Image 1 (cartoon, rainbow, N blue to C red):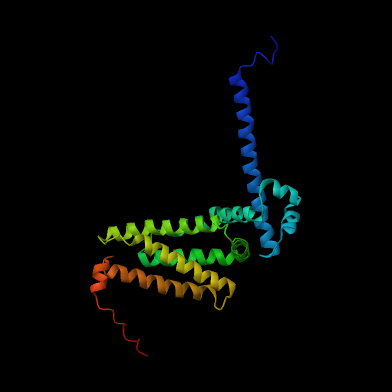
Image 2: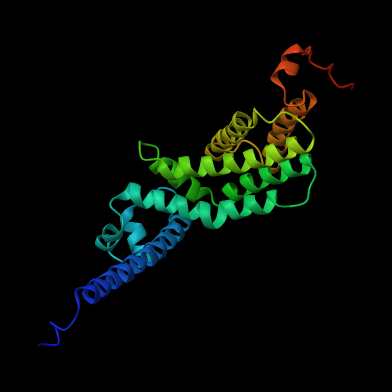
Length: 235
């Protein structure tokens, strides 16, 4: 009996599986390295950076990039995921995890989002311009992640006050959608400093939260209330 024939089928399968697992792990690690290099290239060359510039900045050929990414959309999605996982999400989690009252919490979360996008404008514009077609999985996932996080916080805070939480989901998605669209418009045309934008967004979002709390989160109570605008502030 040869040494080869003495190896059981199970042992052969185990070795094959081990090689496949190691290759998958290598591919994941290599993709992350290339994505990190892509983010650095975007920061250096701006949001209009091309695949040739990305490859050159990383120090590889475009062939290598296409070995790990099916196309530019795949690389764009991976860049967005990496940006969200390593930069945006940790900053928002840190802001929301602080021991603050409701107003302080709202302002901290808005500030974290605005300041993070403002500090990495090129990456944000790159992702939004290159992921503007049908392949927007990473963008949609990031929006959902933030909205679900806001949903949890709103639900907990309202429930602690004995308020109705049935509207927490649409409120959360509405808040996140409003902030994201406002920030997107501001990034494309920064007509004011970021501090001013944070003030205006906080004013809007806090007014909504305050109104929700005033009606106890109940749409029935809200609909039964009068809704006059308050008088203008005195000069």
